[in-house]
Image (tube, rainbow, N blue to C red; front, side, top):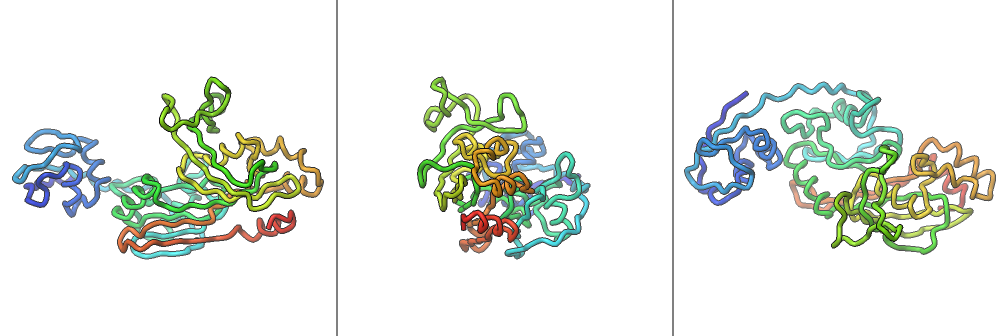
Length: 330
């Protein structure tokens, strides 16, 4: 551990403690500052203070910097489809079947492991198991994901996702015919009360999902998904979805609860609707899908350093495009 003593200068005066700490080169970001404050590693004039404490010029600030935690992550030799890369961010077209970060059953074969192999420059804070990850895609979802290569970029991107200033468009193929050509799904999402692998909208006394943001339930996170029907054919709906929020399984839940489960999404009941498809050849195609048909097609964000607005687009993988053309959806 390293002990650091700083006397608050005029630049720090009047700032919150976490913002003042971010001005110190050894700390540099508010996320690191918050980590130190939460772990009681910061004292102001000999006292532990909250992140919101106001700093005065001349205050004595003592910081205990932890030793970097050696990562146990192992590199994974996987060629990545890199759409953009510089000193701050890397934008990847993630293939379906690749888990984003280590989890049970996937300790060494994830996107994070592949990134460790690809570059030494990832946002590690004080050592962690999800370096650079600011948002996620499910294992079976293909498409665009951005990863931070340093802590400042990580903090900027995290704020953009939290403030909903990013642009995210998904494509999906659902089993069922959408009743309207466009619309919005709104609900509060929480863990499913019975199946802990799933999420579900919180249901009101009237049997419908609670959808008033101004009257939230005790649990659950507000989720909003806008949709547009690009095509409807043979009992399938080809959808364009715009995320206003980014909750776990959000699109999958909203579509399944509106009788439009994503093709191939067994967790959310797609297998139970296959018999509703009249064409036997499409039924067989759906039964043999290697993944569910959800694709992160567009991502836009503001570059953390330059302030430039960056936008990326990537179509479905070729094997899925072949199926979409066969079904007459594209």
